[in-house]
Length: 187
Image (tube, rainbow, N blue to C red; front, side, top):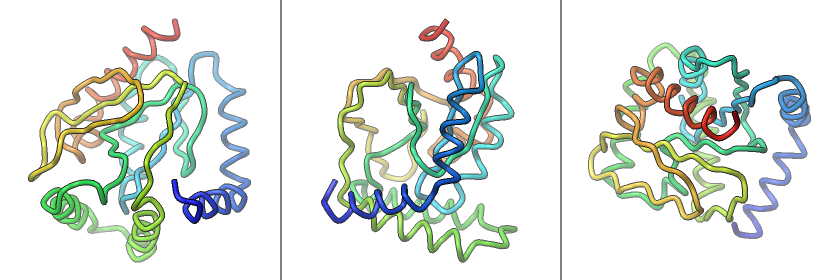
């Protein structure tokens, strides 16, 4: 992460005491692991977590956050940076976002935030993570989507669907894969 990006991220963390409090509350509350959903940098991603949360079985509490949490890490078809992908994939993501955007009365805000995050993370490379990490990769590629290459140690599971549908039509299967991983790791 560049110094400028690091400084911006620190500013965002400091400016969000509500999210930081939610992290502490989530860590204290459940007997089984709490699943913390961190939306992607794309404009419509936070609403997709609702279907995923509804489909997750096993009594896990689910929190949707805008900032990273702690403990086991589950990455749902996450790429280190959208800028590192191909032009065809970026075009497909924008096309699919636009197709799903109807009905959002705050779309201007969402797109502005997306643009800001894409700028913030344009050259970001993830640091090594010591937490147990699961990467759930979409089983169906979009356009000329490159294969997901997460740079830190992780376990990999393929999900049904593409980058968007793993949390839409495929939310149940995705949730089941995450649940199975959590059960195998923490029970």
